[in-house]
Structure formats: C-alpha cells, structure tokens
Length: 188
Image 1 (cartoon, helix red, strand yellow):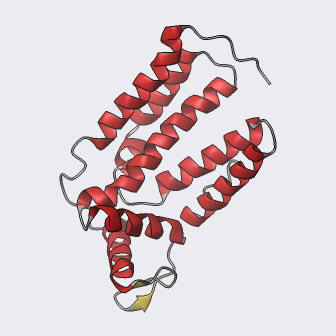
Image 2: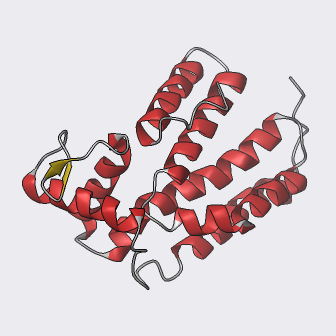
Image 3: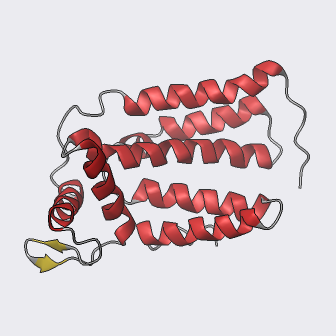
C-alpha cells in the first residue's frame, strides 16, 4: 500500500473546505422545484404511503405490492419525511447526504492510493461537477446512495486497518445492495 505523505496545515484544511463547498452546492435551493414525474415521483409516493400506513416492510403503489427496488431508499425517504415533514427538501435530503458521502469517498480513495491532497480534491471535485452525480444526488433515487455505500464499503474493506473496518465495509456493501442490487458488483 502506498505511503501517505505528511500534510501541511493548509493541506489538512483543504478537504474540509472542499466538503463545505460541495455541501453548499448540493444543499442550495433544496426545496425549490418539483420532483420529476418519473421514478422520483414513484419513490416519493411509495415512501409517503408507507409512512402514512406505518408499513415499513411491505410497500405498495396504487394499492398493489411494490417490489421494484430494495427497501433502503424507501426507509431513508420515510425517515426524512418523518423528521422534516412532507416536502421536496425532505425527499431530496437522503440523496444529498449520500452525494456528499460519494464525493468524500472519491477523495478518500484517491488519498489511500497515495495521490496528493490537491489532485485528490480535484478528483472529488470532478466527480461532483459531473451532471450525473450532481443532479441525481438531488433526486430521490437509488443510484447515489447505492454508489456511495458501495464505494465506502470498498475503501473500508480494501484499505481498512484492524478488524472493525472490513466488517463495517462489508455492512456498507450489504446496505448498498439494499439500495440498488447492482451497486456493490463493480467493487466486489
């Protein structure tokens, strides 16, 4: 494993500033606009109905059983709505938080591979600059939570020190499959 070089004081501060900038970008106008009329609206409706009925395990859409996706996103949307109420911001919050996790995971992976602080920040920034990550992180969809958990699991399993990190990494990979079944496949 490559040795991570010592960091200057500014190099220790830069990742936190980068994460703050990513958070500002992803959280800006979180409650503005409406959900897309495709999968976003379906996921929101399933979670809204499950929260209303208290059905944490058997989801339905238009009165029929719904088995389209794993339960993790629905649980996250239910929890977010329970905390923040039925709003666009509540439905977007889980994706934004996992989007931040994905950006942080890109940075962490680059650092663990021995890449310097600034090139690692550039890699994380380029990931955030892609419209796939930026826009999908602001939607109630399974892609960003699944990718974020899978990346976290991979980094913890591949580079984890001690016993706990590989176990937590395995749990992250398992949760990734509960978000989107294929998420951990590239990492496994």
